[in-house]
Image (cartoon, rainbow, N blue to C red):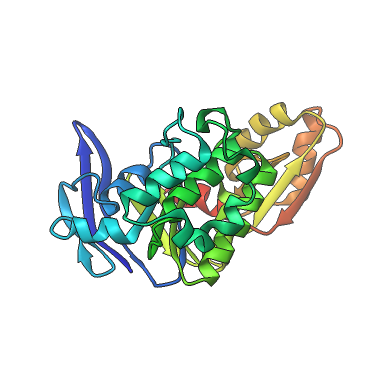
Length: 299
């Protein structure tokens, strides 16, 4: 459904995309995972026919993004990272407007958005700019779906919303996928990666790896250690100073580390105790997508 080959895009001296290639299958949820500034939004804007790549080719549903942009725009729903609906218009006015732009009506395609719209229907007379973050997110999704697209682009759709709204949103995406919709979603949240069928980890405008979340975690290839103690800030510095620690970073309420040959847990515990640390807990843990990203980003 989506194909890109060797896409490059620069803004002045900044290389936003540096030879990105991807394939997205029909009915798939494909995630593009990476931090701010990695190139996610630039890639979405190229695939949505909003900007042109400097080089490379891309097609959506078999249509070329340059020559067939009008056909693509009929078949694509796009939810940008920033809330971009008309803030002075009400919820129902925004939805009616976007339906009219694509030559349809709310009534004709209400079944497409019913499960989502019912969450915001009590506020249908409220101006969009006065909605909460989670409600704005649901309204934007409804507007992206109202013309019955084949492919849905979601650029960091859950950034800045609460945990409950994030879960609700991903539940909605699961229902949309089961209805046959192809979804391409970007996010800086590593925990959302496991909710996708396949993901691409992006850094500095390049894909580091593309595979299923399970295969990426399986290919970590190293023993990962979790460490905690009473003084977590000082622990981080002391772990990084120990010569057999290869890489160490904060992961939630723990520090995660990979190690060099010759590592010995007992020696590390003695070293930390000798530095005055108390309540030391060091144990092996299974790597998550975040750990895989941190490891790949070092190469």
